Length: 515
Image (cartoon, rainbow, N blue to C red; front, side, top):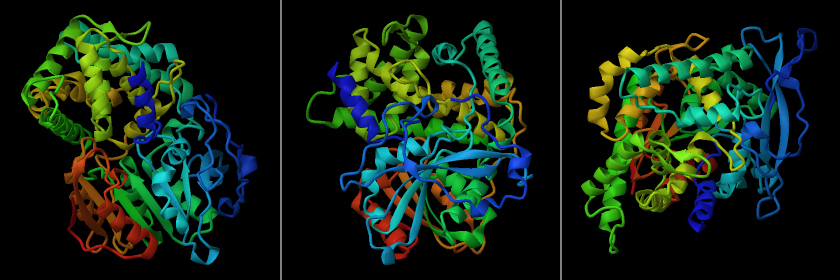
């Protein structure tokens, strides 16, 4: 149907596209005494993305015939044993359009997740960063455990279909047991299929990879653009290597002071705010809102739909049915960007008539499922990295105690986000800390951009990141807008401030507000 085709095209302009099951590592003898900082990358035309990266075609040249090049960088499997086994990290770049004497260096992007493939994301969004390309080579990568960089693999496609369709908000003891057992089975499959890489996918490992990348690319300082989880990775890098921070921008900022439960509760509030804004936007337009007579009516009808789906799913994308869990995922996906609100409206209107195909497509996009039924490894990688980073482990009893608080934060999404906290309960690797340390005394200024309407990384995280980085490091910029992130909104004020810093070193006044 036409709306589905338009939705696929729209998502390519909004989001990062979120197989080997054996490590392609070198032996100890191969890596012994090799100075990995001196390795030379063999840049070649990029192959088509593999299943773990999401599939599809090789990246097309940019409008100015800018060619994409890919290479594999060796990094230690275990940074505690840098002379031991190595793994391969997949990189992608496009060269600067500027003259060599104007080139600053490489600008490395991380688009978030954790678990998103930078090798597929950068080409999808590159036209939005063309101004930055006038002085930088644009570079991104698949972090360890992601995409082509020794991906974490858990369950097969058939089992993932069932995993993402299961009831994620249990109403009784039997449903609770089923959810807990399914989560345990997923985690056990990760350990069975990817046990060698699991202890080595922490954000601190990825930060050390970034510093190696900086050196291999020939830069004295790391010039960096981190989005969403990429801000956490950038903050950890700044903490470990403050003297090596170059020009850096954090957009859609993760709050580094929160533990996993606090972060989940913050997301419940953030997505509820985005839903409120979506509903208000629909009824404020001159035409009649097709999914409700008032903002409250819009939200009430969505709640009734989800309750009905809990009892009886409707037809989704054949042969699958749209369950309550899949519909919730689809709604959450659409709330990431105002550009997708029209598709959410279409999807809800269709679902009220018994057709769940658009909401299911949105859910598939959230879960990394392609049209041919194959899944990328974004969910496996997200789980592995998050559980390796976060020390707390929450069981079902803990979730049930916290449910009233989550429901108060979001009547629609509270249950789902609360039950998501059990994902690390039986994880094979112990979590590193309650929250990341991003203190970076002595680092160069880092521009920290917060969006007041961001559902996934609520606005308060930007101020927390500024404070945690330390005096004289974080510089806060506020965007009063909607959606996940600010630079991709194309707001001229935001882009002018970011471009001015990255290209010319002009730090905007702290507390600048863009509308």
